[in-house]
Image 1 (cartoon, rainbow, N blue to C red):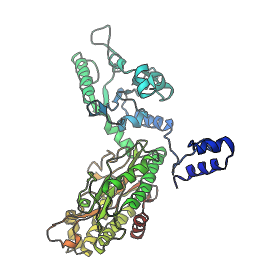
Image 2: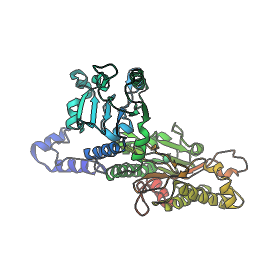
Image 3: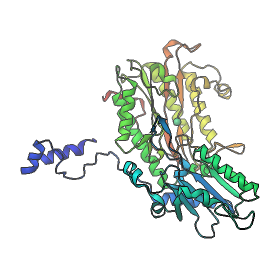
Image 4: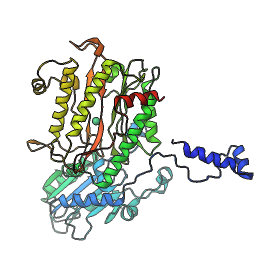
Length: 489
Ligand SMILES: [Mn+2]
């Protein structure tokens, strides 16, 4: 499907007489292009600048009067020697700014008398550096493109926050007259140390804010409920991931390696605009399927294995989290099928509970009960279901919680408990449902026919006004569909 348009281009060129036919014969096959040959299955989705502005307005509205918020961007991180990792902006910083500048600083001033409520400090233009890295916005672009009320080079930051006044103890700059500073260092601890040292000096002069609070506490609550623009990005991340899982299924076969399946999936994502996966892809076959985070992906697939593939794309800073489990030979064994059915039934039971007003615990409980019933049906647990649930007997086989928030981070950071209660779901929250059953070899008291079966089924879902929207359910999941997708190779 994806290669269709390039085939079209070639066949049109073939019909063209004269010079175009000659150029084609000479190997210049793509001239002249009949039309732009986009080979994407799904057209790109871009976050509008307005989305970031809306996030800033929500954030400013939450800040106390007489406060400022100061957020630092993620620093560059070294992979080895002089090679850096592909730059990833800090999620909280990106949520408010849409800016990928390393080392940038954003200042939010809810009560700014001069109207400059959003001030950016960004990397200055640098002709030499830009010949390597391409153009940077610089302070000018920070205003014209990124919507800052004012912007300056990073080097100006230190002087702009605290200027000594003419009278002893008086203070100018962005910290003047401020009681509270909301702070987040973007993971740059060296910068945080310098900033705190500046604050200490001010406090020694009875100047500057008395309270420093964690800006993330406010931001993570905002990030928990996604707006329509964010949902569009999460939907696209999930749709690409779902299609990639079908591609991976077709790439699995006895004699292939886990990394071949992983690469088939990751490549499909990359070919559809994904810059990086949301986490290292897990392709765990046979005995590896019982390891929750197996990502070495170096084993040869054997006839009779299940393959547990937990892989999700990050699309424009929004993540998907999707797991499928399938037989590498295209046919589940009776035991694999029985475990798979128990996990799928539990997943459906949990998904059915998602609606506004339900709690996060309700969903965990629905899955725990269903998984317990399944384990009793299989003979892996015995006894009264209520008692087994209350004793958490199932946990020997299930080993992890079944739901977490998803957003800019694959494990999005909002709290699951508020006060003494479980979080109540509301429209716009996005979460996974991911029950699993894992039976390692030599598990005490378990017949060997069950050994080396690990099954997890995971989707990313959004809470809607009436229930849920499954963003990733395009990936084959029913037994017949999964087996068919593997045999499609
Ligand atoms: Mn997950």
